[in-house]
Each structure stands twice: as C-alpha cells, then as structure tokens.
Image (cartoon, rainbow, N blue to C red; front, side, top):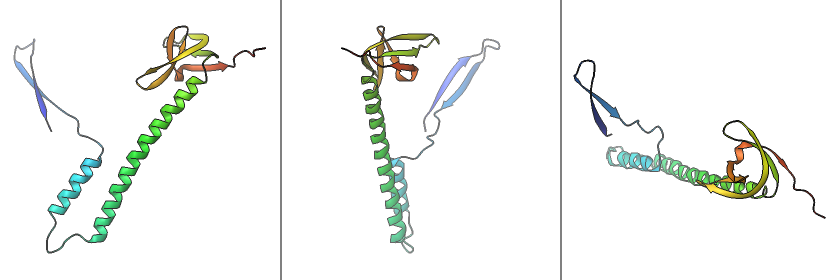
Length: 144
C-alpha cells in the first residue's frame, strides 16, 4: 500500500505540519486476488498433511463461478445499454415532455440521438437530454 506525505505550513504557529494520506483499501476481492490466495495456500501447505482433493475441487468450482458471474455482469451491462439505445431510437419524431437540470418542463420533438459516455441521450430543441429526465411521450401525428 503506498502512502503520500503532504507538507503544509500552519499560518497561526508558523510550524511545518505533515499529514499522511493513504489510499483506501479495496473492499472486494477480484479474480487476481482469488488466484493469489490459491497459489499462496498451495505453496504453504504442509507436505505431511496436504490439502484434500475435494477441497481443491471446491475452490476451483468457486473460481469458475466467480468468472461466470463476472462475464454475466458484463453481458447484462451491454444488454442494458443496447435496450436504452433502442428505446431512445423509438422516440425520434415523437413529442416529449422532460425536466431539465433546473427543474423546468420542456416540450419538443425528438430530432435525434447522441451518445455521451456510452449512454444514449435524446436531442430536443437542439439540446441533449438523458432518458431519465423524460416525463411523458406523445405519439407522432397520424399521416394521411
């Protein structure tokens, strides 16, 4: 764990004050951490009382489940992003009511989409708005 020393001078006393800021510890274990623990356990086991194969198989099953969970989490995030894009795309040409950052209600026709950090935003009156700011959607007028 690395620490950084920060020095400052107190204006009241004129003395040098040192504080040490440290990085917060990681609260979750990842795949690399699991592998490090497994290798440490195997290298430190007692040769006269080795780990049973059933315990080793259980740990490998946990490792496999961890990897599958991480993969599934990534897939779900991708599906969520695609669903939001399709939802925003379906609003093009529709009249929407939305609330801007100041709390004002804005009504206008969705003219297009923009992507900001992978999140789709709808373009209304020349400005981009998040889908979460939507208050209502009106169907486009029927054409003859």
